[in-house]
Length: 189
Image: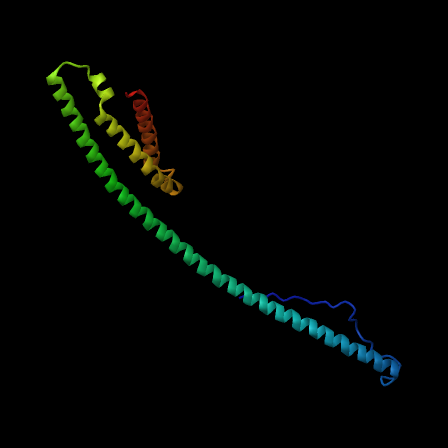
């Protein structure tokens, strides 16, 4: 560790002329000596105060470095916890997505079956039936609810993954799906 040495100047503490012709035991010289001693004490007091402050500053620096290391460890732990939370949320979301895909597939198959049954009974317009189908409306509404519910999870991921192509692709698909859903719901009877 490199130590910096500082020259400390004390203005007003000049050199004492010890070769003067006056007697060193004279009243004036004794008073001058007394003043010199007090100046020396004051200078020593200033120096010890400086040393104490420097020591305290050094100790505070050590304490701050220790606290910084502790905070760094806490931040690293928080980041790890956040990553674990993201991973768990993503896994839950994947399971939910798979379930919703299966539900939608079943509903669409049911819709196709219902539509083919209606076609056997009497002639009708496919578009007219779909437009008034409660089952199709239920499918559309469920999809809208699912996308809106999923959106808050996706916003959490946005802070860290918004520059990923998967995230951008999903946001684009979500926007298109919601536009389709809104168009259907506007036009359905």
